[in-house]
Structure formats: structure tokens, C-alpha cells
Length: 496
Image 1: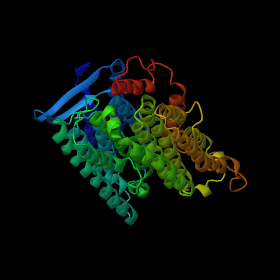
Image 2: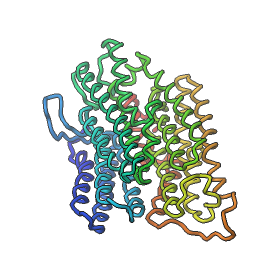
Image 3: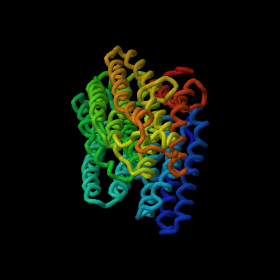
Image 4: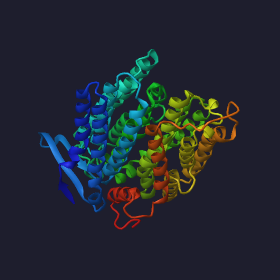
């Protein structure tokens, strides 16, 4: 059932208002913090207020501007968009608290927090976009808003990374625009309100070109190899920006766009007929394993995190490409499972850097003695990525493996097993160095990071356990993913 409700438009608007207030606050620290935290809390409350209805099958819609009878800016909070927005709104609150502490002595804080808010506004705008035009506008605005964050330090290295980021992402945006126009030409609409809008009798070659165009466009931000080059370079940005890029905004928007292309533009039935997802699944599997292998050899903490992100994002792409309900469950659930674990790791990296000045893994001998709670949170996230039961990552790998078996593609189960081994190969050594190697000096005092850095880190780790241990509880996050899967595949009573 669809209901006209302004909350679908207010959710992205809150962050937009926050950005304006932050810029207006100038150098008044109190008001900058007040508006940042107030807007983050208000957005979370607003999004969560729609959750009960979403779990009952209600879709909230709101038309903002209508350019022609078929084209306009409109919002639609369906189950898939709600899942993404709940994750984004929750993590924005965590990251806002963390950023306030992390950026305390940094210059240009007004610019940072203003564009930080704009990024979250555009992310939720993508989540609730009713059509490809609305999605494209927010998708490109996100690129523009994240650029000042990437180059925040304004060093030559940062400026070079910013140029690289713009080159990749604006090119990707151009492909999304071309694909959107071609979709309108073929389907007569750009709506994302149905499980597939393209005609089945269209020229298969043209459909293949459209699929490649849209996947390439969104695949840049989803960091599918070989379109991932901007992501490791962007690690020059401050840690809250890296966390924003990897867990809340940019990369998740790319992965979410791929889900919309597969489930709402093409639809499962048409893609099964065309067989276009076979090569995408293979490319995702290649990315999962190759990025993990590269991560093993990265000594810089944030670069190892970057290549881990490249690998983990392709879980979402692989799950969507398999075109089965269980795999779709994995793809959607991993939006949250990867986000909370990865943001926890970035919070840890930033806390260590701020507290000790260390940025390389080989320098972390005994850091677990000095920062036990911080490294305990890191260990939780590491075990999740490895795929141990009761942690969020296990849920993704379990459903993804079941989805692969549903379609007879058992080799993707092998990919999941190899991925777990590779994750263990590059995360467990960090745990070993932190807790089992002797710290430097004869006496080490426990000295955790400031509470503004520690609290969001512990909250992220708690969520990792929460997401992994509440999968069978009604009303929990996985229920939203189930609702989205039932709509995509037209299944009644599935998993209920």
C-alpha cells in the first residue's frame, strides 16, 4: 500500500537544513556541534518513525517537482530504501559524535561539517529516489559534496587524490545519466517503483549495452575492479571522511544503485532471460578475492581497510547478481553488516592515530594493552569479516552461500570460504600484534582515546554483534531486508 507522506522528502531535507545552519554558524563551535548532533538525531527519529509502517508493507511517497507527466523529482520510501536509510541515519549519528572529537583541533571545521551534512542528505536522497532522474541528481551532488572532504588537508597528496576522485566519479555519473536517458527511451518511464520496467521484447544487444552502462556508472562508487582506483587514494582524507566514504555514503550509494538497476530497472525475470548477470557475478567474485590478496600486503592501516572495502562491497554485487531470494537477502543485509563492521575499524584506526600517532600495522605491538576497549572493538569487527557465527558477517556469507546453492553455482560457496580465509590472513595478524606482541617499553599505561572517539567505536562493535545475533527476531533489521526481497521476487509468506 502506498501512502503520500512528506517524511519521505523531509528525511534528506533535514541534513540539508543542518548544512545551511552549520555554514551560518561560522566559527561558533557550540552551535556547529549543536546543529550537527540535533540534525543527526532528528533524522534518525524521522526515519525510524516510518519503520513500523514499512515492515507492514506501507510505502511512503512524495512528489516534489513534476517537470513533465513522466519526469520529475519524487521520493519513495520502500523497504529497500528504508533499509539503506536506517543504516545511513544510524551511522551518521555515530560518525557525527566521532567527528566532533576527531576534528577538534583541525582547521576548516565549518566547511568540513557543512559538507559532511550535505553528504548524508544526498545519501538518503538516493535511498528514497522514486526514479532514475532523482537518483542521478543526488548521486552527482554526492560527488560534489564529498570532494571538499577528500581534499580537506589541502596537501599536494590530498589535491591529487581529489582530482582522481572527481575523474572517476564524474565519469561514472555520466554513464548513469546516459543509462537513465536510454531507459526512458525504451520504457517510457524512469520510475523505480516496480520490479522491472524494461520491455522484454527490446533488442537484447541494446539491453546489454544499457546494463553495462548503468553497472559501470554505479560500479565506480561501488569500487568494482578495475573501477576501484580512486578509493585507496582517497584514504588521504581525515578518518571521519574515510569512514563516511566506506560505510555511510559513497561506496554504499554505488552498491545501492546496482541493486536498483538489477531489481527495479531490469527486474529478475528479464535478467534471467538475458543472462547478463553471469559476468557481473564472476567480476564480483574476482574483486572479492583479488582485493583481499592485495590487502594482505598493505602495512598502512587505512590502505588495508580500503582494499578490504573493495572486497566486501562486491559481496553485495555478487548477491544481487545471483538472482535468487537468499542471495538477495545477503546483498541487502550486507549493506548494514559491512557498514557497521567497517566503520568500527575506521574508528579504531582514527583513535589510534589521534592517541599514539601510529598509522602502520607493524607499529601496533602491544597497542591492545594500552587501548584494550578500542582493540576489543576492532577484534569484534575482524571476527565479523572472517564470518564467525553470532557476528554480522556470518549472516551475509550464510545467505550468500545458500543463494549460490539455490542457483546451482556451488563455486561461489568456495569463493566465500576463500574470502573468509583471506580475511583471517589480514585481520588476525593485527589482533595478534595488538594483544600478543610485547609492547614497547617496560611499563604501559591504559590510555584510551577521548570518549567522543571511544563511544562510537564501542557502539559500532555492539551493532556488529546485534546484527549477527537477532536475525530470527521479528522487527529487527533483517525483517526489512525480507520485506524488500518478498517485493522483488513476488513471494508471499517467505521466511515468515
